[in-house]
Length: 488
Image 1 (cartoon, rainbow, N blue to C red):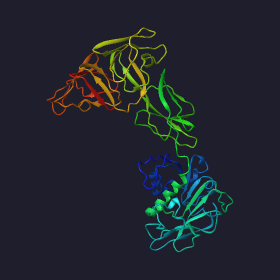
Image 2 (image 1 turned 60 degrees about the vertical axis):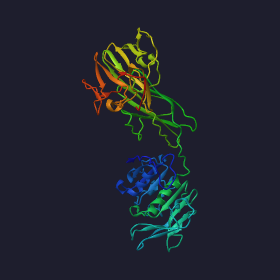
Image 3 (image 1 turned 45 degrees about the vertical axis):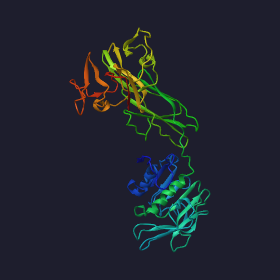
Image 4 (image 1 turned 30 degrees about the vertical axis):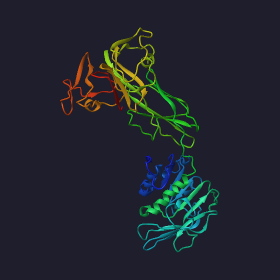
């Protein structure tokens, strides 16, 4: 079962991790996964999978940076690559004979509580702990230790108070450690004999957290840069993403994420991955949004939220007053309107600027008249048939400013959200500038008028014009020159 844990904005006892490592939490059954273990993963912002025993043979452990092994008696412990991948062993069944850490495992319980002594106080895993700590918050909970002969080269880091220092409750195997089963440690691994995490004290939990950070500390945790100059192009019904490689660390793959809304992305599972600098999503007939993220050779993925999209405006045959809800990549009228070869239902586009109308006309081959279309302007589009008009652009995130002249202004808003007029165009009734808003509606206009005495809403519309819709252009009548700043 995949559990994608979001990065917390704080990490209590350590520096923040630049990129979360992948952890395989191995237990006999999913129900054996312990909440305190998972809570530490959560607090460190780690992505982890719970691997049940039946799934061990089919699991590619190369996908993981760290193994955490729960306290189950595994039938085939040899299938778990404990000496090949950084590991924390919370297990007293298989640690000795099967994995060769020692010739036997002992246990201790104490009334009232088990106290553990630190043998290497300078080690990172004991940061903020002290020279001794209480293992559990209840008495008679077993603590396990390595007994008898130990693997050659083990660092024995902590033992039970009053016992032999060789009875290690915590032991560290660094690269080259020779296990009793004949295998050699290839990375670094830790045995942690306080396996009953439900009863951990705060110090015992902190030590486990420190262990994870110690194992991660020298991993490559830095993701590559984000793709540069991401754009989306339209060709027939296809959405074609293009970008440039970032500077710095090499990118192994680019992960393509797609959503039907800007807020709906699932970054657990990409739509596709590619080593190319372009990706085509075919036959896209509804609104779709995309994020492209870079990933390096060890699986670090950066987390940009640069969203581009394909957005459809439905145009009725005849005249429509529209605006562009996405930030256009290209302002050229031909690039924006000519999507499908041999099909151009848009015959005229009219704008209103400097108190004058100006019209661009399509003559069957190219556009005659003005050549650019701009965000935050309103345009009359004349179409020969009902047309679901696709627009490519980036999702607006930064505040924008529209400059209005005294009188009539044909404008629109670069936003994907419906805006309530009384809140979006909030004005001081003693000093107001926007007098009236008009929406084109099948050849007539719906009006919303500002009445300074109409407290508290001030705006009133017989036609029920209460909201500004994305993709719709409007007439704004003002009594002053103003600059209107708005958040998309």
